[in-house]
Amino acid sequence: MTRSKTTISRREALKIAGITGAALALNPMIAPSQAQAAPIASKGKIVVIGAGAAGVSTAARLYELLIEPDITIIDDTQTHLYQPAFSLIAGGVVGADYPKLDNADYIRAKWIKQKAIAIDPDGKSVTTANGETIGYDFLVIAAGIDLNYEAIEGLDRSMLGKNGIASVYAYESAVAAWDQLRELSQNSRSRKVSALFCETATPIKCGGAPKKIAFLAQDYIRRNGKRDNAELTQMMTGSAWFGVKVYADAIEKLYSKREMAGNFKHKLVKIDADRREATFAVPKLVMDEELGIELEKSELIVKPYDFIHVVPNQSGAAVVAQNPKLANPTGFLKVNIQTLQSETYPEIFGAGDIVATPFGKTGGSVRKHYKIVAQNLVDVMHGKAPSQRYDGYTVCPLITNYGSVMMLEFGYKGADGSDTLLPSAPLDPTQERWMWWLVKVHALLPIYKTMLRASA
Ligand SMILES: Cc1cc2nc3c(=O)[nH]c(=O)nc-3n(C[C@H](O)[C@H](O)[C@H](O)COP(=O)(O)OP(=O)(O)OC[C@H]3O[C@@H](n4cnc5c(N)ncnc54)[C@H](O)[C@@H]3O)c2cc1C
Image (cartoon, rainbow, N blue to C red; front, side, top):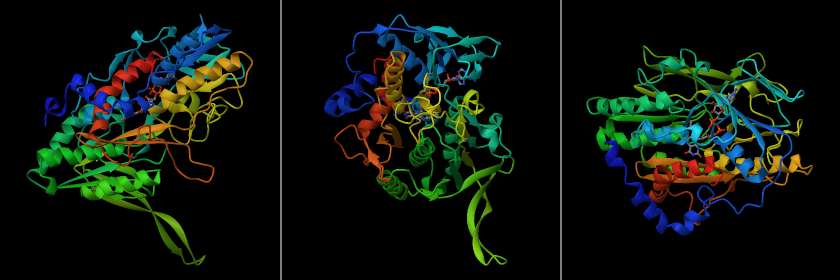
């Protein structure tokens, strides 16, 4: 399969999307932003840490809500990567340049091209890598997630993209994964091959990504290699296919239908790259003879592989993770999960992947966050209580084949622990659909760019 064979033109896609217009118009990923109230006076200095999806969009929204606001963005990143394309790059659907945007096209605020290395929430200041200290009256923390591949023994980032070790979480390795996938498929023509698709126990961005690459591999080998020769196994750390029951059931059925296996409670702890062996810690009940009761112990299981997809441990960006006044124990920014405001420092807000919400580390969540955070900040600036609430909305466009996606949308669980489905189209969300593939491949990047200008 080549890139050109897997894509259709954007014009064709949008035409089809137009046919399903009623559904798409309802979709919060796609519907245009609401009409704006007239901007109001701005008071004080706003600093935004992070020029990714959340930081850029929030700053852009603040320009809509406020008259001549004083906004400074801190981030040394010039090339803004549209990360939802990483799985598509790994699957050869789009090329390596597809996700590259220039932050200069989107940032209107004063821009300090440095990393923030410290936040003093009591003194209301941020220190940058070049030693500058910047005071603020309001702070939006949108510094995203740090990836820690080194938490897996024997692995470091330089090993990604080689010797069958792939990962869609880092740009370079997503690019390399496309060659690795083709090599795996090629090998399946002449011999048995084994591919392991791992997950990790920390919160992660785009929780569906480790399964998207598995489904793409399955379909690619089916079309181009010898499917009977390929053993494809999802190695999950949890005990369910997905955190939302109806989606978990639908995913399990698809794995069964596509003859892909799944193992629960398998945590990747070590890689031997030379031998192509992966070690998993698996909980096991063992009788303790002295105590006379069964205790849970960890058993180590070694599995050979030809191809392994690894997911790094993830935490909030170090500038937050290393600040106990701001971070929770897993390194994410403590906020009220509805207002996205710090409960200790009312002038601090969080947006995007860095906030310690139970889930919602997706661009679709950012599309909710930036409006809520900008409005709540303006409310606090004007002496009011935050007026906006985040319902936990998140979306995973789970690629299930070349040409089909299951659009998994959900929000915070109910008080009784029940799941909350938030499908934005009047369609069964547990069905894989070509329409959602078109949205994922052709519509989401234009929408993302519009979001960066606070218009989506
Ligand atoms: C493989 C993959 C697939 C995905 N698929 C989807 C999908 O299909 N749909 C979807 O909705 N979402 C998807 N996502 C998730 C989506 O990309 C993220 O949720 C989104 O980018 C989060 O935006 P953010 O601004 O919080 O973080 P980012 O966009 O990561 O931006 C964080 C920014 O903070 C900066 N920063 C970090 N530390 C500092 C510091 N100390 N000082 C200053 N700046 C700092 C970084 O340089 C970066 O520019 C996917 C992600 C991945 C990796």
